[in-house]
Amino acid sequence: MARRCDLTGKGPSFGHHVSFSKRRTNRRWLPNVQTRRIWVPEEQRYVKLKLSASALREIDRKGLLKALRDRGLTLRDLERRSS
Image (cartoon, rainbow, N blue to C red; front, side, top):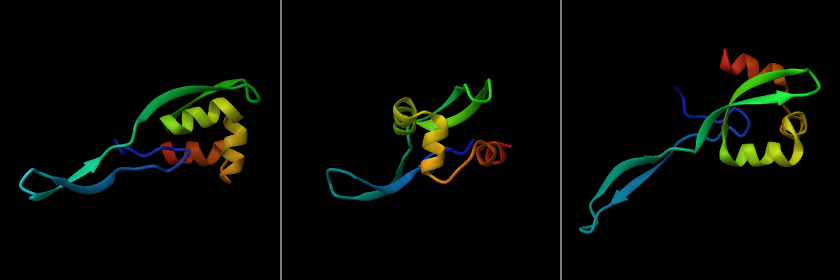
């Protein structure tokens, strides 16, 4: 399962773990992505999306369709990605 947010596109970040001796080894930070069912009142149905915590807050503030419109996306775009 790819850890990528459907709305924001956030994915894993890469960097180094630095030990006490300053030895660097590769590591990655995973985004806080969760699968949620979001109710879309305009279409009278649920949509299942993988969203980051920041995307969930954005949807709470604006609503799903407004948040998608601000990013130049539609529900159909998200359904194609998840399929």
